Image (tube, rainbow, N blue to C red):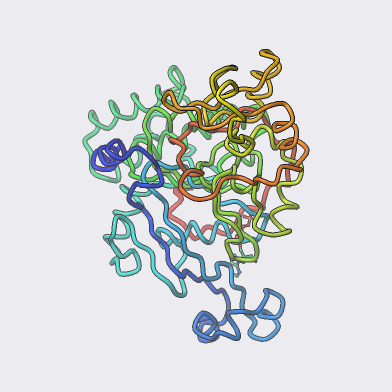
Length: 403
Ligand SMILES: Nc1ncnc2c1ncn2[C@@H]1O[C@H](COP(=O)(O)OP(=O)(O)OP(=O)(O)O)[C@@H](O)[C@H]1O
C-alpha cells in the first residue's frame, strides 16, 4: 500500500484522529437538463425540494444532494442505502467517473474537481482503484494477465508485472488458477480476480461498487471475509457501496446511510443501530440483533461499591453485549468493564437484557469514544437478520471499467 498513508495511519492510534484521504463538502450531482440542473444546488427553494417535487418542477433528479463527509486513512467507509438512493453516483463522483454539479472533493488535500485529464487518469489508475460488481474482466486474457492489466497500462515491464500479479493472485487465494480464462472460473473466483486487479496497482484507496451483490450468499460471505482479512493485513482505506445492511454492519468502520441523495446518518454501526437519527433509520435497523452490534459501553453503569468494582469477570469496553451476556451467565455475577487495569463500569444481567429488549435509555455512546475502534476491531461476528433486497440493475457504463 501507499507507504505514506500506512506510516501516518500507524502513527495515530484511532481512525477518528487520522487525516482524511477523501474530503467531500456540499457535494451535489443533479441529473437533468444542464442549465436547470446547475441551478438546483444554488437555489435554496429548489435545493430543499423532495425528489418528486423537484422532478415535476424542473425535470431534474438530485442523485446526490448536499453531501459532506471525510473518508479517513485506514477505515472501511460504507455507503449504504436502498436502490436509487444515490450510492453509486456519490462514489463515482469521488473520481469524477460522474461529473459533480456542485461542491468540493479533495484527495489528500488535492482538489479533484480541478484535475486535468491526465491527473484524473492517474487518480483512477494509481490512487483510487475501483472493484466493480460485474468484474470487468478481459475474457480472452488469463487470470494472471487480467491482474497484470493495470500494471501494463502503467507501463511496467512484462517480467515485473507478471511477478507482481502472481503475488497478488496468491494473496486473494487464486494460486494455481493463473492460466485460466475468466469463463473458466466461478463467480466468486472472478470477483477475486477483479479484487486482485485493483490491488495489483497498490492504490491508496479501494472503491467497491456493490462488488458482491451478484454472488450467492455463501460465496458472498467468503468474499466479505476476504475483504476483512485484507483490510486487517494491510490497513488499506476502503469505500464500499452496498444496499445490504448485514454487509454494511459486518464491514464498515463507519456507515453513511443514504436516502434520496442525502446522507441521513453517518456513524459507526453501533451509533446507527443504537441511536438511529430518525424514524427512517430506526425502521431500517429494526431487525438487527442489537446485542451483536452494541458494545458494553452502552449497557454499563458505575459500580455500586468497591466490592462490585473489584470482583466479577473482566471484559473489554469493545466487547459486544452478546459477549458480555455469555461472561455474566458463566460467572453468575456482574462483569467489570476494564480498560488498561481501570474499571470503567459494570454490567449485570438486567443491564444487558435491557439493551436486548431496546429499553435501555443509554443509546450508543456518541462522540470520539464511539469511533475509537481500531479498524476491524468491532466487526459484527454474526449476521443481522434484515431481509436482503434484490440486487440492482447494472447501470450504463460511464466508467473506465475495461469490460
Ligand atoms: N445517468 C443518469 N441520468 C439520470 N438519472 C440518473 C442517472 N444515473 C442515476 N440516476 C438517478 O439518480 C438516482 C440515484 O441513482 P444511483 O444509481 O446513484 O443509486 P444507487 O443507490 O446506487 O442505486 P442502486 O443500488 O440501484 O445501484 C436514481 O434516481 C437514478 O435513477
